[in-house]
Image: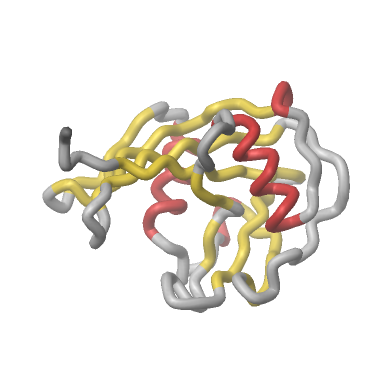
Length: 148
């Protein structure tokens, strides 16, 4: 048995009129910092199902899995024992207007222009956003200080 462990995170980019939806985290990790709607893959679900579930749970929008497009993957080494594989998906369509459905985990949500992203962003989702904007399909973050 291996000691190797990896957590799979899914992130969704809801983009409209040149803006991306972000949420301001509430709680222990990243309190007061901005992040994409995201979460961990749960046992027995596909990554596409996880993205759709997280979008509904966090911001109340419904996404058909056929409307998701993988735009970036990041292998992230953080402070914990496990490394993370972040899968970033663009939602090409969704139904509903985003609202903060998890006020115990999120202070607020907001739309931000690409050129005016908040300074207080968690580096992990920011790396995914930069990969998306640059059209780079894969990057690493935190491995011996490397960001690519």
